[in-house]
Length: 177
Image (cartoon, rainbow, N blue to C red; front, side, top):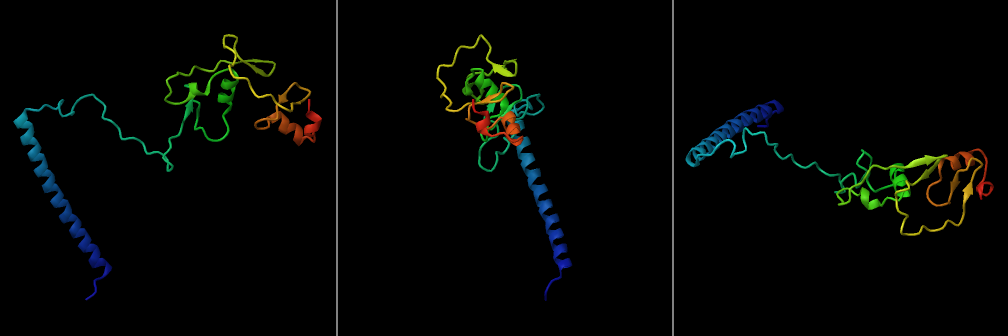
């Protein structure tokens, strides 16, 4: 004889009640054995890690599906970068100011310091206390300039002023310096 859905649901409920009763009796047995061991060895709550103000270690958060964590670079001011995609402006400014990318690597021994960069007439200038870069930069083969004094080396992403000029109808040849 075939059972109906309702009959199977009743059987499931009955089995769940039986499983819960078995679990409760097993838990009671475990608790009783633990109490005997505590009394036998004279253990205290502090020795068991109970009733203390110590924080219990939290389980580690799962990383994303690729197994890589989020932030690889941080400036200590809340700015972070995963190392993927274009470098954020805060990191580009710091590198322009003479800082090393290794200073911002999460978990590195070097501590990053807040970026201190002065702006003079729209240009970013490294503070005077910073030593000059040891490694020479590659010279740009083309320089593009506008009437406002903005310039672009032709390397890296196009800056906003250049995008606006191109949208206004100018060509790269018009802006070549």
